[in-house]
Image (tube, rainbow, N blue to C red; front, top):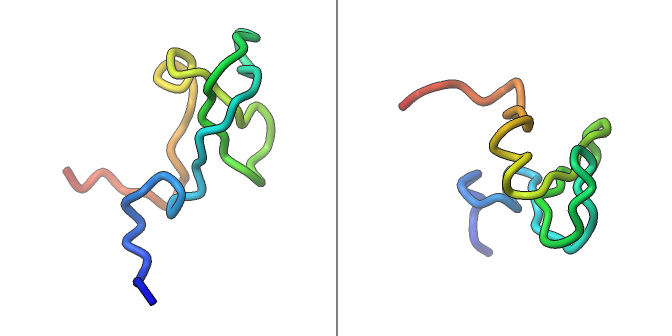
Length: 61
């Protein structure tokens, strides 16, 4: 079995689904974070503008 790398969106708890952005209402592919409090489903534009990273993720760039 492959060990989780925490690098992919699915490993981080993020998934791409077809739906409606909870910020602007655009219908299409959205980035969803299951289990997170609303808003937790963003279109690409709003994900860049409004989505926050999980609190346990550090800036180690």
